[in-house]
Image (cartoon, helix red, strand yellow):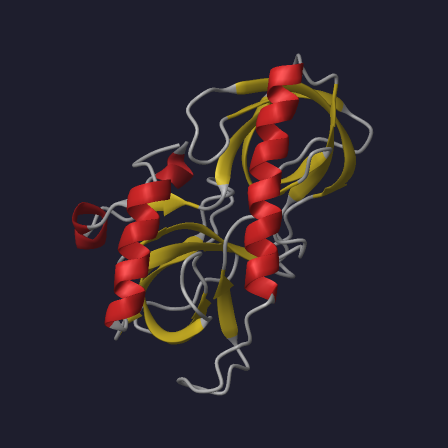
Length: 239
């Protein structure tokens, strides 16, 4: 569970965090893999993990949906799998088909997925900012759950002051980046300047932990209020 712990600095102490990519435990009779999911449907989910199970493998999953405390324990089958590849910057992961869902599990997942779909439609209905720092040629998108894109970097969590991005190629501390941030309840996508406060380079001895902590710069008051509301209503200190 090491990837739940961010850099032990001031940001962690000052701000409460919301976990976008929620933790999933995937296991068979021989081993257990801890991964994170940011893409889910009523029939399956994509789990980011550096050493995924092979295609065709039958596994069990245990996870709690964001904003909920009850653990779901379900059976699944790996449909697609790709190992982590630091040479190309590709994150490892597996697409898992859910099977034999108990009625209460299916209801919980369907309700969460419906929320995701509504948020995603709301996001897609917004236009990108017409004004903002930079030209947007290298922007890190931060959005709600439900994205159907297979990303080679993704947002693990967010707070009022910044975000942690999982990537095999973190930018150097002090680097300036752009963030396109959309939160439910805001009127549009906001393009922000951010600074890489710290990073954790890829290490073969601790796969799955590399990434960078971003510190937002010059957050407009209305967006700061929206961030605070989002964290208060949706977030938990841990998953």
